[in-house]
Length: 511
Image (tube, rainbow, N blue to C red):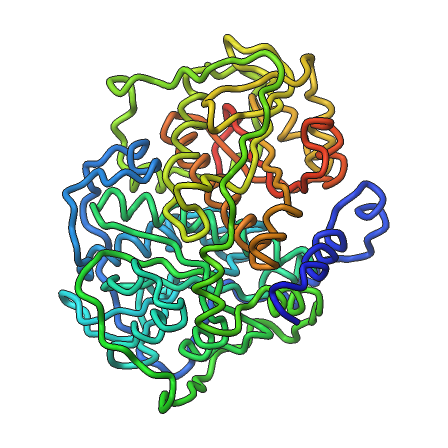
């Protein structure tokens, strides 16, 4: 199976669609006695405790979310910078006890609160941190060293000499642990890997921006080389993306030959793991085989072609800079949750405009060059926004405006589209992410499917942060695939439904 065989990707997307019939027919149930652990635990490796993050940066969250460099530009991250970035991206931010145990809440939203994304760090010698390959343990706020020495050259070679990565002093690697999410969501998990990876990287990019650290996401790399470096069984856990941090002189080249195989013991996730072959097949089909493949992959995509104008235009009216809240990104992350209920109260158009503009600016990634600004298209069902007629809209990123598709009260339809969940109907706005999968997979191959899902997660994660910075709430939702496309057609005809975020006034305290 190769990246170019896009029928595999198309089949996977079709196989994992939700519909009213498929949901009613499903006999799947949650076996609570076999629920996976939410953490990867190395049984015999000593932990390197990390200090708790110090005082927050002074950079306003809404500026950091747009991924401008808002702090003094710095070339090399120190240990304290990495502690801040790891903690506020994937760390534990709240604990809540209940009669049966304790719930640990994380810095970024995750489907089902199952937290299947793991983070690793590969770095050269840094202030207060030796060169090595590390695993980040959120539950202990600690690192465990898997390999001693500077292995960045392995990642640079695997990326086909990606220029930014070649000069990054530190590289964060995200991986997805299939079973931890598939326990609840079965084969649809491969979509969720992108969403949940994206919300973590939305936080990480904002933290890097607030710290003044240049950063770039790299999705084009030879999968087997990265998985080998981390000691992963790619049928159970696999590398998804690399985040380069900082810039300095390029490291020395590191060959794969002679690097020993890792075989560290980890605590089993649960009593037994159920295999969902579609997940493995989709990952293998979207993997790149050689460094030449990785280098070529980044050059494949054409320029984005803006969809033609449609309907009545409403230009965005974001808040002026003087009215932007001054809360830091750390403060926003600490109060972020997933709203479980919304009050049917209106928000204002300035807030919606600010969320849309800030969340769609600045995703430094190898699949988003200057000539291809976005893979996902944004469609909205507006219920209650002062100054905006209720109805369905398309958000033109290029023209920075909403374009009306149809008008009316669509609360009932929005709740239905969100897998019959009232949240999407009670919110002020429901934002649907759709993508032309035929176009992007035609150029990027099956790995384009990964990139589309990851970008949607990043955009959704940035919307979460922007909403909470403005005193609103947000929640990510799943949906009936074809019914979403049908609702926004003919404008959205031929697209695939990717993600959904509801925004509004939370009815009560978030989790």
